[in-house]
Image (cartoon, rainbow, N blue to C red; front, side):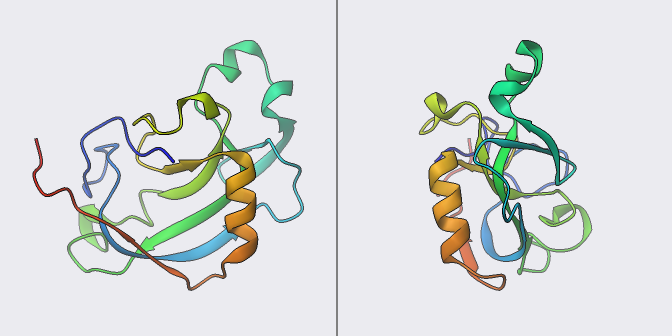
Length: 137
């Protein structure tokens, strides 16, 4: 799994992974093939390896999306700290070789196989706790 390449943060436009209690509020991608690319939560009809070389350089959202909504008012819900409004997801990536290092723009990334497995195991309403770092740099 990978989280944000930026400092962990709940603040809008920070590109940091937010902390606190979240709920899976939406599951997107049922029936799509592994590697399908999503833009605006809609499959574009191409797998990552079918996209242009230029597009493949980007960190794409692939296979499945678990959209998260914060459950803690003023931490990750409401105002400028709203995980749902920030489009925070758990999703697959076309750069699986980078998993385990901080590389995302705030989302939690899994391998395409792992996101497909997790997607099939959990339901909308499942809660997830993202631990806050003990010390922010």
